[in-house]
Length: 268
Image (cartoon, rainbow, N blue to C red; front, side, top):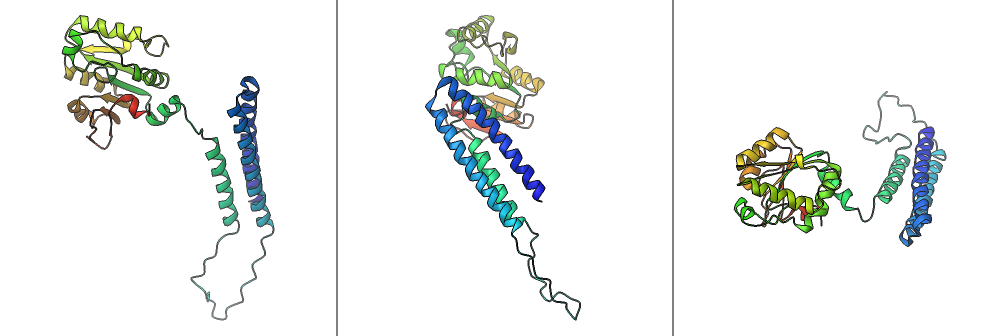
């Protein structure tokens, strides 16, 4: 038990050392006051953890021996309901609390958008998403046919973070070839293709909503994002997770999340 505690302590010290080294390096490079306070807070956490572990190990080594039970003439235990805990249980719980304190400290106070996207998507490494009403300002194929396609500026940052983490496919049903050109031009002008994570070949077009649903079924994504409740409902039994975009969110199925916009779902 003592060897195990020593190994845990060494593991924590190595982990803290690596983290501290990174913070000190960043502080020296950018002279950021927040980095200074992060280092100071880490030092406090190190001292706290060391004291908890030292107290825990000390209490284990100084634990008094239990007196030997008096022999029973009947051959049965006279206290059958007595709770006998193995030695070290209390101290191991202190070790656990110390580990939890360190784990909580390592979590960033203000996670970046990229961290939030990864947390929300979880194991979703393939994502499909419709364009109208989600990425574009236009909501219908008719509106897209009559006007120039416009990428919603508020969604752009989230979209780029998704492409860094997941294999993203954009899709839409359109009325003509001109609408396709409008969409591709709008995405290109917005800088969606500049990072290299999303290419034009992953922007798919079809002529009907059923065709778009067929695209999703064939790609078998971990997440699908849509604003059509009928398609979302029909895909609920085939797709692991879905995000339904609607002005007034309503729960369609247990594996369907709802939000008023894509960026709102990720806290932007």
